[in-house]
Image 1 (cartoon, each protein chain N blue to C red):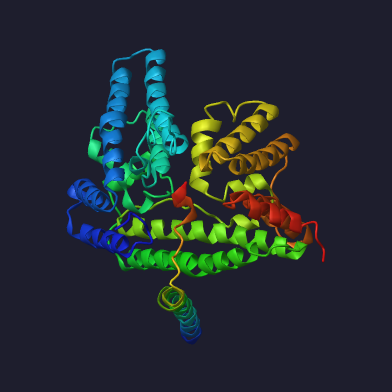
Image 2 (tube, each protein chain N blue to C red):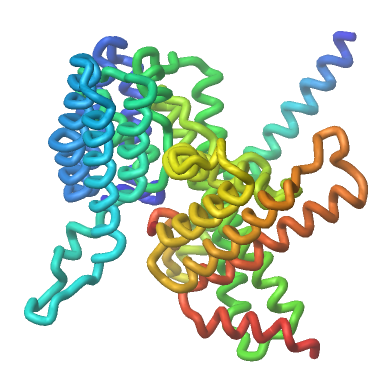
Length: 394
Length: 50
């Protein structure tokens, strides 16, 4: 069994947990959630379960308690900042090891420095996002979480473990105190999101993937073939990830937690900034709350905001993978966001969203977002072939 | 008024039934027919690899 939303046994057991939780009294919900999530993940992905549990209980929770202690005893701001920095640097170091040293070897060593098995963790970077968000937000909102099981349930929550959506701790904590009660509308909403998610992934994304694979086999593509490849690739990414998010939200509802939305009609955006407020929303929010705002992005000059927006997108590209393509993708979006920030470009107001002017903005935004999807192609030969296609009319 | 409401509900119900049937049938088609015929593997969600 794999900890994947495509593994029938995993999703079957998750649905069973969702149904069993209705038999559990509310005061035991967190304990039940931790035991059930731990058993499920411990079976499906033992190394992921042990790593996340160890980091949560032996690193994040102690740092949090130390920060609460420092706060209660009136420690200086420097001590509090040092503790927060220790926690965040430790977590980011883990993420860098996970991302950068996956295949790291030294000449005098026979194999990788860190075993492949340990680095093949499910959704580890999303766990780090949740953990950093928790440490940062608890220092701002002065959260005092005494129960380590609530924190463990937050980091192990099975529907969102592999790829989000990244829920904020304060939102999760509020919901575990009063999980959604059973009702026919809850079951039907959950079922609808799950079926729609699988429809998007198993039917739409599957067909789009097949078409893209066929188009990429063309040795000398023409301009319209290249355009079609990019459009289909763009749609493929949307249906794949929006499908995943639907399934995670559906199973979240079954488990009594309303997981935040990840997509909000991104194709209707009229600027790239607006697009990023509606595509992979929880990741963009994470970068805004934990990188952009702490670096002074909201209260600074337009120029500084533009540079920071560019930096955030390059970081976001680097997170996808330390490869030239991903960095180029990040830089592309970063430059566009910087230009929009400098020029003060604003989305078209809702009242004026009709007519040729509106649709031309929508088309132009989508064209700028769709084009760099090419950088996600697994090999550069395919990417170059598609690019050459733009120079061939017939 | 009641008749109008009933008609509206019937239409809404038919649309819902159509949408569900279409989604379930299409999922069934890919899983049972398409994937078993070609012995193709279903690719994992893109973002799981990040």
